[in-house]
Each structure stands twice: as C-alpha cells, then as structure tokens.
Image (tube, rainbow, N blue to C red):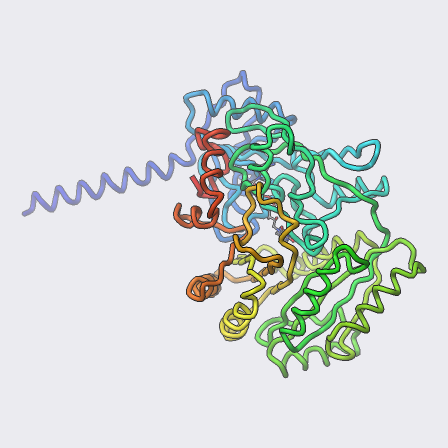
Length: 506
Ligand code: FAD
C-alpha cells in the first residue's frame, strides 16, 4: 500500500514536472540563424506588450518579436520556419486590437506589422498602395492630401490595414460601398511557405479570396491596393431618437434601400438602456436631461445615426437630404440633433471617446465584446429575446450597443469572411461593446454566452464577427458551406499551420 502511494506520488511529481516543462517550452529561446539577418527582440517590455491585446482577457507570451524592414524579411522568416527543423509558429500583429489573443503566438515569433507603413496614391488617384501595417487614420491623412479617400471605413481608424482586411472591416458605409474587404483591388501576400505572391480577382484568385476575411490563416498581407474616390470636405451628422423598435428599424431599412438614390452616406444605430450609461452629449445641453428622462421612462431608446457628406453646403442635394430626414422619418418629435463637422472629425470620432476613456483609466480594461450578424427576418425576435430579456435585465450594462442594417449584396461570397448563409437581402450588424472589470468579467462573459444560447435555441441563424472559438466543431459550423474551401486553402498556402495560431482554428 505504502509502495502504491509512493508510486502515485512519483507519477504526480513527474506529471507536474512535465506540464511545467511544456508550459515553459512555450517561452523557450528561439535561435534564428545569422544568415536570416533578422533581429529577434526578447526585451521583457516588448514581450509583455506583445502578450496582451485590446480585449485584456488573455495573456499569451511569444518567444520574440521581429520588426521587419521589408517584406523580404518576413519571407525569409517564413521560409526558414516552413523548411527548417524549427518548430515555432508565426503571427502577424497589427495594433493588437484583437479581443481574445487572435494576434498572439505562444512561444513563437510575432511579426510587428506596424514596422511596415507606407501610402502611395496612384497617378489617376483611383487607388492607393498601402503597406499593411499602416493605420487607417494615416491612410486617410495621406490620401486626403490628394483630395481622395477610401470609400468604406470602420468606426475606429487606429487599427491596421492588414489586421482589418483579415477580419472584414465593417461600419456605417457598408450598406453603400461594402465592407473594407470589398474595396481592395490587389494584395501582396507572403504565404506560410514564404512565397511572395501578388494576388487579385484575376491573379492567384484563390489566395486573394482566401486572405480577405481569412483571419491571417493563409499568408501575411504586406501591401493592399485600396479603392479611392473623391474625399468630401464635411459631414452633416444626425442622431434621432425612437421609442418604438419597429418604427426605428423601418426607417433604418428605408434609408439603406436608397442606395442608388440621393440619400445618406453613413448609417448606424445605437441602443440606450436604462440600466446602462446613457451618453446624451450629442444633444444640446438644454435637451440632455430630457433624453435621459426618456430612457428612464421607456427602458430602451433607439438612436438612428446618419451622416451626409458634402463639399458645398449650398448645393440643393444637401437640403434635399435634410428634408428627407426631418420630414419623412418617424423619430420622436423634437428628438433630433445635428452636428456639422469636418469629414476627418466625423471619421475619427471614436478617438475622441478613446481619449476620454483613457483619461478616466477606462480604456485598458477587459472588453468582452460580442459582434454578430443577424438576419433581418429575425431581428424582432433578437430584440425581444436579447435586448429586452437579457441586456435590460443585467444588473448594469456598460459600453455601447450598436444595431443597424446593411445590404448583403455588398459582400463577395467568394471571400473567407462569413455572414449568415440565408437568402435575405438585409442583415443586421450588432455590436455589444461592453467594458468590464476583472471582477465582473465572468458575469459579462456569461451574458454573452446566454445571448448565443438564446439565438441557437430560437433558431436565429447568426454569425459572429471577430469571434474566438476554441473547438474545431464551432469553426466548422462558423464557416458552414465554406469550411472545405477554407481548410483546403490552409493546406495549400500554409501546410505547416504556422500562421496566426492565436485564432485557434487548426
Ligand atoms: P490585430 O488585432 O493585430 O490582428 C488581427 C488578426 O489579423 C490576427 O489574427 C493577426 O494575426 C492577423 N493579422 C494582422 N495583420 C495581418 C497582416 N498584415 N496579414 C495577415 N494577417 C494579419 N472592426 C470593424 O470591422 N469595424 C469597426 O468599426 C471596428 N471598430 C473597432 C473599435 C475599436 C475601439 C477597436 C479596438 C477595434 C475595432 N474593430 C472594428 C476591430 C478591428 O477590426 C480588429 O481589432 C482587427 O483585429 C484589427 O486590429 P489590428 O490591426 O490591431 O489587428
């Protein structure tokens, strides 16, 4: 008996030793041969920064970080990783604005893409060739100097071109111009084998379609050719309040159906919840307490947000759009507010919020965000089951809740990005952008789980955006009819499964 106990103790000690070895093997030293001519930084502050992301939920420690000076550096690294006897994996990292370690690599090499920045506008000003580590805010600044601008934007501009194109890139212009991935003409990509390939709809289309929305699985984008158009000078920016959900969504849907018509250029929507923080600052000070009272009275208030871009305020089209908004929409009488801002200030609006939150110490907190696409036919059920029955019943809600429709035909189904596989023209984009504390994070994460469960149980065919699954069957379900192509492309372009392992797909 004593012997048996001794054996069990010994086995336990061996298991512990082995598991601590495998954990520490994650931070094992990576020796890159001198011939690669790459500096692998292992400075603790650099490693620590690369171990975290905007989500502030996971910590994944890489073995080192390289700051490439050209795409050739990345190609050499990947050729070595793919052909040599080394076993490390590689993750491109933009700003690390992922939520759950998607840009991380345990014990492997992070390629800091922000080392590669450049924007070159073509002579005819129809496109810009942009290095993938460039932030969208810098794409804006450079292209605006030439009087041109990309045509679709995310709400936040301090994210990289490569990171955004690996996800999709959505915002209030999608209903007109499609997600950011729909506005790319050509890419330079370094595959998991280290090959440097240019791809487009005509050239290496399998790689082009795979990489757009491909979660970094098939190659590292080093250059993207982005569609440009005239850059307007200013934006008239409106918010209108609704107390009735159907009236709100009807107006939203009508506005996005005017896509070939004179209409708004940007459309989103927000939900104010009485158990959350209600930001009334868009309204004049004299109206702010009325807005707060309205939310208290109704429990939920819906905010329609639109913008019309313009150069010359005297053009009749501007007053026509304002007329449409003020006379034909059914918002609560009197609850409309308009700001007239520069186009840049409009696009860069989230940075103002970022600065406010940073000054309050509320930026670098856990972000259990949940982003979903919901078919139009089930948006009412989603609203009743999620907004009314889950979110409004939370003890406190913090952060922003976005809800707005967009036109499905603006997505190219050949790309990897997923939206619901249903035969409907309109899908809703939902962003439940909650901020947490380490203490209430588990509670908020369980709210997200309840939402997903509710959708599943009710047969609402949602797709998640910026998702993080850890089970293969969830990924297979996520990619649905595209899964076979997705995994074939992996075998083709990254057979050793080196790239972006933080996505946890392969
Ligand atoms: P990272 O988080 O660093 O990387 C994302 C993924 O792409 C990782 O898997 C990484 O390995 C891979 N990757 C990075 N660069 C490359 C590359 N060059 N080639 C191949 N793979 C690469 N998204 C929207 O669509 N719309 C929004 O309105 C929006 N608003 C946001 C607001 C805020 C405040 C924040 C923090 C994020 C927002 N996002 C939005 C999400 C944003 O698109 C993602 O965070 C995205 O991951 C881009 O961030 P990043 O450049 O830091 O990429």
